[in-house]
Amino acid sequence: MKRFIFALLTVAVGVIVVAGAVLIAQQRQAEPAVLAATVVGTAETPQGTLPHATLELSIYPQASAAVPGPTSGVNAIVAETDQDSWPFYWPSTTLELPAHTLVTMTVHQYDSAGAVYNPYFATVQGTVDGTADFNGMKKPGIAPADVAHTFMIHQYPEGGQPYFFLNVPMEGVAADAPNEANGYPKPVDVTFSFITGDPGTYVWNCEDPCGDSYVQFGGVMSERGWMSGTVTVV
Image (cartoon, rainbow, N blue to C red; front, side, top):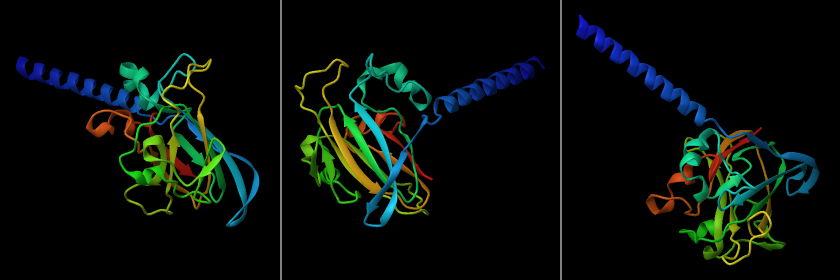
């Protein structure tokens, strides 16, 4: 009887521990706060007059006193152990875009370059005119060796929703660029426009190897809040 009671208590404690760990994991794996595009008017597009929305993001090479970086939700475990070492998109990687709208995004890119493995990801794909604006210069792409990060939206593997693909390389700042008052160099401002379709849920990620583990595609590369996220078209 004593052995039975001890075994029962052991199982009960184990269940409590596992349940607690699951609750903590679920809390930590909550999506980062939603960053919604702002409708600012209308614009003429190849598809006629459409609503026009804007959205701004930044890419930082590491956290700082000026920019604390991702420290909650899915980011908590990484942030506790190695927060200062990894690049991240800011202020959120959970994006919301209006359907059937011209969306203009501006990304302030503060990191230095690290070449992409596949030159395809150094080209602009899916924008209105096939180009992006890099510090005032329109280009269909940049040299693979000049890519710091990329912003690529694509469908979930199961599909079953409107097609949506976008890839824009983010040009790196010079490795010897001096830091400004905020502790970061002057960014490369990358601006591009694309048209959304029907409502759907998509993922986006960086295709430049800027993580750790296998060929630098581990760690923060797949972590929402760092170099990966979601896009919901509503």
